[in-house]
Image 1: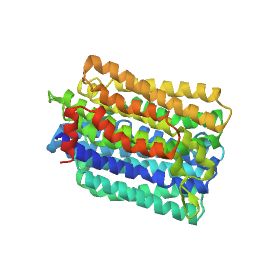
Image 2: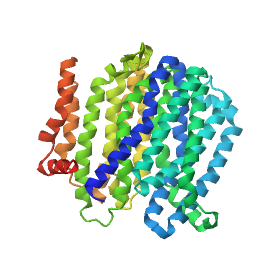
Image 3: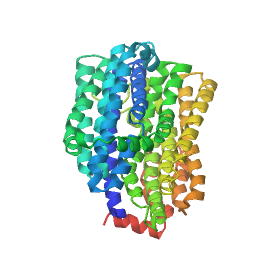
Image 4: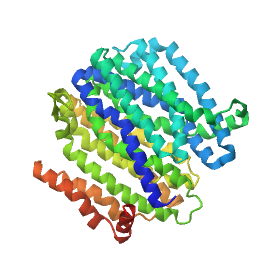
Amino acid sequence: MSLKTFGKQSLIYGISTILARMVSFLLLPLYTNVFSRAEYGIVSLAYAFMGFALILYRYGTDTALMKFYVDSGKSKEKTVFTNVFGLITMTGILFSICLVLFRKSLVPVILGASGEPIWIVLIAGILFFDMLWNMAVIILRTEEKPVLFSAFSFANVLLMMALNIVFVVVCKFGVLGVLISNFITSGVLFLFALMIILPRFSFSLLDSNWLKKIVRFSLPFLPAGVFTMVMELADRYILEFVHSTEAVGFYSAGYKIGMFMLLVVMGFNMGWTPYFLKQKNNLDAPNEFRKITTIFVGIAGFFLIIFSAWAEKIVQIQIFGYSFFGEKFWQSTDIVPVILLGYFFFGLYVLQLPGVFLAEKTKFVPVFRGLGALLNIGLNFWLISLFSQNINSVSMAAAAATAVAFFGMATAIFFTNRKIYPIRYFWRGILFPLVFFTLFGFVPDELSWKIGLSFAYFPMWFIVGLDNEHRQIIRGLFS
């Protein structure tokens, strides 16, 4: 795959991923205008748990599917898919049954004192269907079919938006309406995914040796996945424990805007992982990775600047008397620049993953994620307790903990790669966005300055942040 092809596919995957996650942004006006801070806190805890539980449902089998599907060749693709899909279906049924059986005990732990047992039943169903249809989407990534991949994202957005309007706005089911909407959406997407699953699945190909091989490969990735979700979600539960469910709702509203940077990183990673896995025998791979790193960091820096500058204005835009955020959530945008910066550091971590994968040192991945998780949990407890005067201060404390944790991960993998897979990065291109972001924080908070610097970023990056080699690559991408 050429750099140009990789760039185009990453763009399609990026737009698709942003579109899939955009539903959470598009629903913010609804949730923040309809729900109280406490009610939105419950919704946030529900989605936090589902994000964590989905890692347990998969336990690394998504990585195994991509790895073995790429390595096995055409003759074994169906065998690989059959055994991975059969395995997660069986274990997924067991996990969901456990959630349903222990729903009364789990509901106060997962959703707080105001939760209802029926909500856990719906969550169990959502997790099961999401796990299955997402496996089909992984196949589309591996087979380089970004258009069909995008169709799933588009369907997800349309269904979730329509069903939330029906069950939350029209039927006024509250939190229950959110979960019903998600349950139906997940079930419908699974039905669509059957057109991908059924041609690639055969009971006759189930093989105990393959099942053991998949489990052996997958399980080491489980701790890394758990640590990742701890980093992503621990702050919500620590806020609920130390402060209040209301603080969770307030913090989550601002966090959603900051998560746009995560969508940029995830969209890029959809094309990045299959790309670098195929570069094992490419002697020029380190140089290719260096170029991609410089260009992606520069583009990510643009989103870092734009959303930091305009988040406060965006959430106050009013249409038909309703603002993007309900007024009680407006001040939550104070944390947006910090969350954006944290995910920018996460992007730097993702860009360095080829080193540990191609050097076959994936044992370090759980170490990096574990370091991030420990930093996140420790700093959250310390900072939230230290700045517990009001909701604004505890939210900023939680955001700062997240940013420092991601920086720790990016730093740890950098020093590891220097020994096992050194890459000579173009540091001017990497540091330019961070310097620009820092300087942006010192300019007057005036509209003219924000507009001027927003438009100035790309020309300055192109002239100052790049050399002739990288400028030529940029021109090539658009030729």
